[in-house]
Every structure is written in structure tokens, then in C-alpha cells.
Length: 178
Image (cartoon, rainbow, N blue to C red; front, side, top):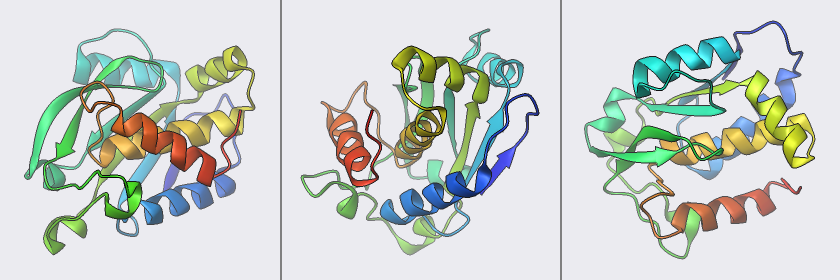
């Protein structure tokens, strides 16, 4: 589900919701297992200050649900723009060469639990898109994918490149070309 909590930047929610569904299915997240909130820079700066102690906006933050944290270890991770955040890394996830197909092997109770929330600042995403010379809707899809991989337990700071390789593979699969 995508919830638009800002009013300044117009965004077409239907294509983003369809993209979220495709990524959710690829990662074997349950239906309605993730909520993406589109927010403003002041709103994400507030979240960043509360949850990370950083008084500045960022592009994307991931918040794993409490149910997923029961079987998780909290590790530092980064947003797509390279800023540190806290995410849960699922100990039972298999992250071998098969990538997303083996991503989330875990017991049935955890697999049916709510996965978590993602907050994306449309202000920062738009600036990032301009800097990277890519379309704004593409930037939003990249941030959604990145946030969902963090919800899946990936941590590109501490995983010897698994998240980055999987994200590149999924970008190709989903047509997220620059």
C-alpha cells in the first residue's frame, strides 16, 4: 500500500502501487505486508531525528515491524543515498546465488507477519533524480526497491556486496535502467 502524506509534489500512485506489488511478490512478502509513505523533507527529517538522531532529511527510511524483529539482529545500514539507518537483518534468510528466490525462508508465523514501513521523501527523491539525470518516477521505484530490500534484512554496509548485487539484478528484472 502506498500512502501520500505530502501535498507539494504531485505523484501518480497507481503505477507505484503496481510496482510495489511486483517487488513484494518477488521478495515473498505477504499481501498488505508493506506500507510505503510518501512524505515531505520536514516529515522525514523529523523521523530521521527521532529514530536515528540525525537532524536532516534523507531519501528513504525502512522500519521493520516488531514481529520481524523477534527473529532479527539490529545492524547499521544505509539508505540509497548512503546515510546510516537501523534495519533488522533476518537471521534465517538465505542469500545465496539464487538471490530473491531463496531470500526469505522462515517459519510460517513470521512469513505471514506484517513486514514493515518505508518512508520516502519526495523532496529529496526529486533532488536525487535531478542529480542523477533520471526521471522522478524511476527514482521513486529505485527507492521503493531499496527500502524493501532493507525490510528483507539486507544490509549493504555489512554483507560483502550481496544486497548491491541483488539490487542490480532486480533493477534489471524490473526495467529500472538509468
